[in-house]
Length: 287
Image (tube, rainbow, N blue to C red):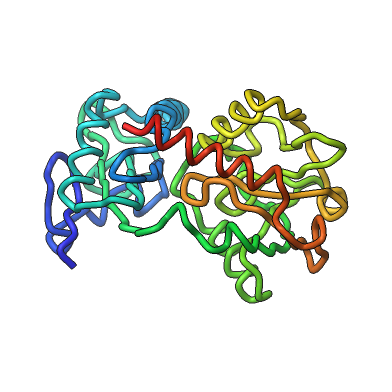
């Protein structure tokens, strides 16, 4: 491939990119990341992603290596260099390379963060056929650490969850803790019941989704009722609709949970309308 990536201030062919074996992202999963969608060459929800990035870094006491304007310039440059029309920009910041392995954090005045960005071209990203058929999911136990609101690179259990879903012959998994759904493996979870959109409230136990925030804002503007509270798998199976949101899937209907059809087994009007609104408004606001 001729993809150009960004590593610590330099744009390089991916084959020439290098990160130290002593980098704490590699040794300790000591880092955070963001994924920003690109539609029509424009960045979607960019301000939300940089704001969450700053929060994640602050929570881990990692220096933010760039201002929002600098992040925007680097994102635009890497999109342009790779000719991405529809796709994703992946950004990762780690605590850096202290020159050896140690559990203690290195002195931030000496060890600077490692910054990596790369693109993934996905033509037709917004035209996924799955939006018309819906996803099938299974439920799994949520055994992740307690600070899921920090978007860290600790993604082993979500990866395992996706493999559990794959082995079950379905598309994804929703995680359950203390009897209630927390979120999907890489997305926020919702149901539509009693005339309301229901999704778990923000806290340390779920990621504060950027797409989630936009979709709930658009829902309110469209006079749709929203209730933020936990819900069970059984309630989801009996709901009129279910769906997920994420930066790469946008709004995606869920039509089956643990083998039981939701809402007749077809995408419902609320999720389809929210997807339409989200894509329309996000394209207009892209930068």
